Length: 239
Image 1 (spheres, rainbow, N blue to C red):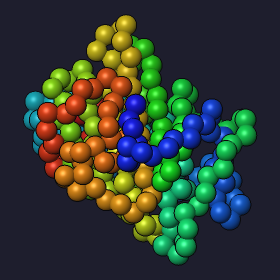
Image 2: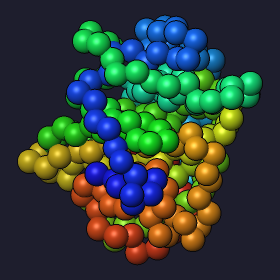
Image 3: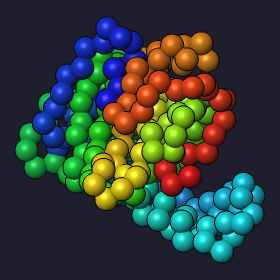
């Protein structure tokens, strides 16, 4: 998957994630420390309106697609909770350190987790799948504002979609999150989903993005080098 924030970054792989222990000693992954504050109805209405504005012909089926996105967002809740628990609180002097977990933690099925020097990465693959998780809206539903920093343009839809965003939440310091999503083009091929979050405070500009200096940058499992970058794009999940 991606090579990390910088090419020389060392990645520490974990077998599975059970609990992330904050610097206070509280087991944050076992409780909903960052609850969902958006209702399903509000999400569906906003999602459908945005979709139809972007593609008027989508009106007959946009609601159904938005319902799928909501289900995926709920399934991605543990990943969103983990990311927010690792983010730096405004009054923190150092980032809460996640500990190597013990067996039995609740994490979405098939999701592999690894730590980087300045953040965390989630990877998922499944043969023949259209997708299963939506961290982007899982974060938004918890009050996180996401501003696009840039989106690589791949030469074919089968190579997936990616978006790099700056995340802000009241009481937490901004962090960068990159989401890569690829539906399986055929039943024999694999879907892929990767989420990379970086809490270093470094916000990549467009030259840095083009050079691959962003969380998860430097190559994706099913994508060649991008042909270009744009500042704005739809979310990667079922867009």
